[in-house]
Length: 81
Image (cartoon, rainbow, N blue to C red; front, side, top):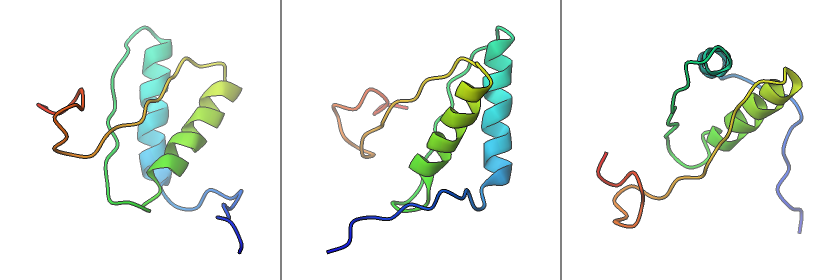
C-alpha cells in the first residue's frame, strides 16, 4: 500500500497565502491578529498553513498555528463563535 503523497510544489491558493503573509507582516510590526481558516476536508488548509509557516520562518517572522475541532463540538474553544 502506498502512503499519502504530498507534492513539494505549492499550487493555487496564492491569494489566500498573500492575505496570510500580510497578517504575519502586520504581527511583525506589532499588530497581531488571529486568522481562522476553514473549509471542507481535503481542500488544502493544512498545506496552506504549512506553506505560510515555511515562509514566515524563513523570514524570521513571528507566527504560530493550532488545530481546530469540528464545528459544533461543545468542548471546542471556539464553539460559541
